[in-house]
Length: 595
Image 1 (cartoon, helix red, strand yellow):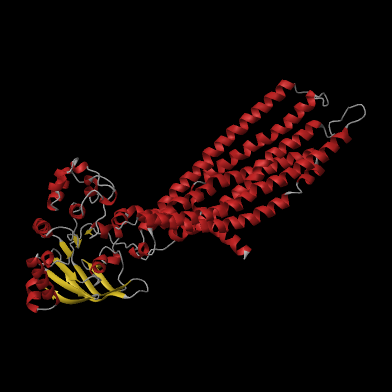
Image 2: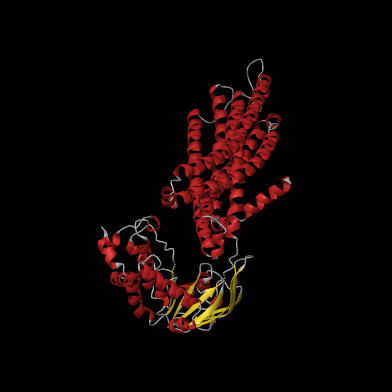
């Protein structure tokens, strides 16, 4: 079980190899710089020992004391300078890889089908984007740098110590197996605890995001205190799990400090005995004897090894956290989207649409569309009506490939939509959803999102067609008015009309209005439809609505029930037929008269 967990961690970290290979030159330079830095730093104790023995007049040397002191200063400066270069290469590399990971993560989730977002909360994706990527960056930067620093310091310091006195060096290494055992056992527990903490962080992030997004509902139902208590409970649980992680991490440094101090006792005891044994009655020693200067060197080397040994625990913690985070993040980055990109690049789409024996089911769920046969000639309009849950939005979601049909074919201009490149397909289609999403930006930029190169004249024309121009004129800063998060400063109708203007400015071949006039009063809707008549004349338009008045101008109308087309025809034909559509029309006419 332990070996399996270790192999899992290694496998998760191997996912980073392609990212590290992109910056292998930076990594190689960083490793070279840390090596040179530690050559300088581990040479300093050697010169310090010579200086002490020279000052005590116990070792004859041809080098003047001034030059020995200058060498110490130069070596110290060299060590610091090359360590600075190490940080400028390895740490900067970690930041570049962090940027790559963020870009790849966003690209991965952007390419997923709609079902992906149904199965995951926004808070969990935010947790991946923030905490997990930061933990991976800490592994790539500090963990790699300090690991290299630890290895090179050990190699050079131990080489000098063996050169000075092999038996004393071997005695100092007695605590090393104990340090390795402590690091292994605590590192494994840190990995488990950190994974639990990250999962709880997902819950708390999701709760915070939903609370901020739904603050109006919370206030309207006087649920502020209840939501605060829920968030407080999640925070307490997050605190307790973090404290559990902190308790395990807190054992690492004290444990290694105790073991390291054992090495000090060994150096003091054995080294002191060697110094006493090397001194003759006349107080004269040979060059090969163990002097106070050499004993001082051992103490300095132990001090140099203190941080690398202490860093073993810290680095182990970062490696375990990085492995856990890369496992969670890699699950999404490596996820293959069911919406694969086609190869057909179409510069102009006429908009001739056909549904051929189309059925749709979401995963293993029930079928939401069955046996759809439908033809929408280019330049015509189709109205789609039906009860809630009848499959209206699912039907139009097949065109821009938010979903792919489970069976059958959806074709545009005779080409299966699966064969189009996604960019070519989606650039020819503009969808105005019922729930209009606006970015926290100005009205101008929200409209221009559909066409970033649009001139102010085109923006004005789009706003006028959507009956938004008068509302904009009444706003304090006009087009430069910031709408707030999700367009919170605008009414529901204003948000829908802004989304409509955004779609109009795209000048698409296929325009889809998914119940996008539901929050607009009847008179404004009538005015918008009149404005849209000229726009709809040369493009294929699909209009979903629960209002008969919205679709009655369409060339053809279909009625959906339980995922099937039960009626199909023009407005007058369906009224004369006396079926579901006629019944809906009569009820809405009666409601209008009563109101």
